[in-house]
Every structure is written in structure tokens, then in C-alpha cells.
Image 1: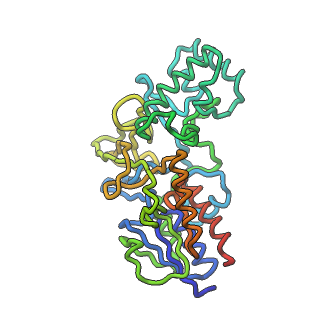
Image 2: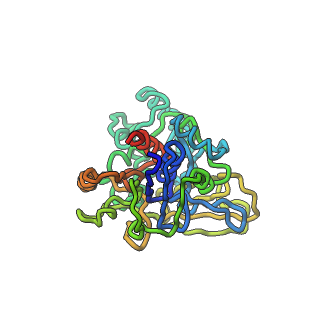
Image 3: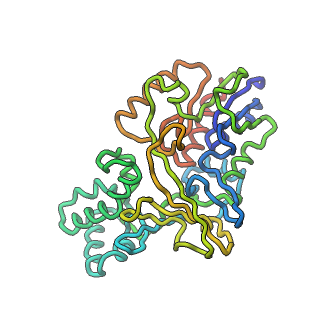
Length: 371
């Protein structure tokens, strides 16, 4: 099937991965289009005038336990050994989250922290992550106090800012991402492989797309393509593909306010969360990721907001029963189409970390390569 010509809508990791597999392993022609003026989707980064690698759409940290994904990525980039930590300001104290044993001793008096530590070890398995809503079901008075403290100081206000609703209106898949970690491990991720691409994410995607069988067209919308293609791989919004015939799938969006300072560093860590203070959720300081050297620094204050077509970008699908039912209707419609495949965060209406998006593309390729 070497004469097959594929159209891939979206030049992020999902689209680039399947483009490379089709071009390289099946020797098929691939046209990759993207409505943006750059490749790499929301992982896009660039060096600014100060020589700092800026993540345009917020911090992206690559982490995975998937050997096949790590091997695929390692063909196109080297990684540093960066392991991500997140600092939160709780009661004016900078401490690491997820809430762990070290956090315990940062925010409570030592005798109180030690008592809680002993009870946590008695009631939970060490190195276990306990979702905050499950953690609240404890009978012990100290653990109840701790659960309520973490719920309010770490979870409640941050979640309300990020999702625009109360935590009990947010799906369990989201709340599970804010656990109490029965551990001294301060890292945000525990994956085997972690790091930042040495020359940035845009360079990785550029390398993945660098194949004689692949043509890239930027600032090109799907509706503007007039040629006929044998197959279409669509990583854009599935509801947009069907012209919103069943209604619009809701998303949360993010607004980044960039600020430059004439100092070496603005804060003590790459990401500092503000669960209870200010209207922004967190501040990113990008020069930490690749140890960029500059007398200046650039930060981004992150504000969550509702997605509105034409005004901002889709970031996070909102997981709840109603949205799942609406997506299922579009999925049924998609199954009626021949040789059109949906993938990626927008195509699958699913929150994917980068490694999961790549893995989904690799799996889809294995499914269709014999067709």
C-alpha cells in the first residue's frame, strides 16, 4: 500500500508520531496540517531574546514508564535528568506537593507532625498515594484534621480556580491527581524516565516530522484542504469535525501572563502553586528546566478560565457523566466513517500526558498498518 496518501490534522505529538510511523514503516506519503503557525501543539517552546527556553503553553515535563514511548522519543532527542518538583505556598510556607511526610513537618509543629506520621504509617501502605476524597473517610481525629487541612489548603481553592466548580462536581479522575502521598519522595512524578528534551519540544517534533515522505503545512485548517486523501487522522476537536451537530464539548482553557524580570531568578522552583492566594493557580519560571543562564528571568502566571470558541484555546476536557455521554454520541458518529481516525486529547476528548498521547498514536498505527 505504498501509494496511500494520508492527511494528518494536527502537528502535535499525536499527529507527528503517527505521521512518522506511516512514512517510515509503510513508505506512505503524509501531509500534516495545523491551524497554528507552529508545530508541536501545546508543547511548543522557543528561545526568547534572553536565551531562555519558553514553554508557550505552560510547563511541559516529559515523564513515562512506557519503554516503547521512551525508546521512540530517544531516537529524536536527548534528555536532561530533570525530575519535577512542585512547591506550594501553604499558610505562607513554601513546601512540596503532593502533600507528603516532608510537607507534614514543614507546616505543623514537630510533635504534631510525628504523631500524624505514625498514624499514617499504621493506617496506610508506605509509598501509597491516597486520593484526597478517600483520605477524608478516616475515623481517627488526627487523620480527620489532617484530611480537612489538606482538602482546604491544597485541594479546595486550587480545584475551584482550575475547574471553575466545587471539587464534588469534578470527576474522580481529576481528584485522584491530588493525593496525599505516604512517602518522603518529594518528586511530583515517580516515573522511571523523566526529563526535558535538550533542545526543546518543538525541536523534537521537527525531528519526528523530518522525513522525505512527510509534508507539513502550517496555518492550514482542515476545511481549507481540497485534495482527496486515502486516510485522515484527526487530532482536532471531534465535535468541531462534525460541525457541533450534537452540541459543544466543554473544555477549560488557560491564560498565561508573561512577565520578564531583571534578576537571575524570581522564585525558588520551576513551578510554585498558590492554592489559597491570588487569582492565578501557579507561576512557572522556565529557565529552571534546561538550566538556562541569563541575568534576566521570565515567568508566566497561569489563570484558568472557561473555553470560548474564537477567544482562547482548548486545554483540558472536563470529565463528567454528561460530557462522557455527549462524547459517546460523537464517537458513534465517527464509527460510521471509513478511513477517518480520531486521536489525541481533542480527538479522544481525554486528558493525555505527552507519553500517553504518543502511545495512543503508536497503538493506533499497529491497529491500522495491515489495512
